[in-house]
Image (cartoon, rainbow, N blue to C red):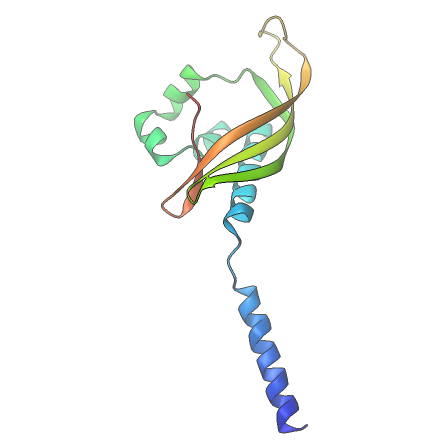
Length: 135
């Protein structure tokens, strides 16, 4: 093998290796995080759901307090991230397309399954994306 070809292969291998270490874009990381949040909602894993809220919110309200203030009104059946719109480097709105089933006790819509578009504000805090509660 010629020296040129050996050098060329070495440079190509180094470039490919560098590409594999590129961190995901902020939007990509946020899409993954928002999807994980909604997966937890769908599975009704409310302790995990609570962990997605901002550290400041969790410091101010315990898990029990949060769900006393905002009890589930039904359940998400499916959800997908439709769009991420960043308003600053540390705040983005995530648009979710979902189907939601209202609890039978929620009148007058109890038991209904409805398509629901939701826009959530997420903020970047200490190296991670967190959901900013609306309440």
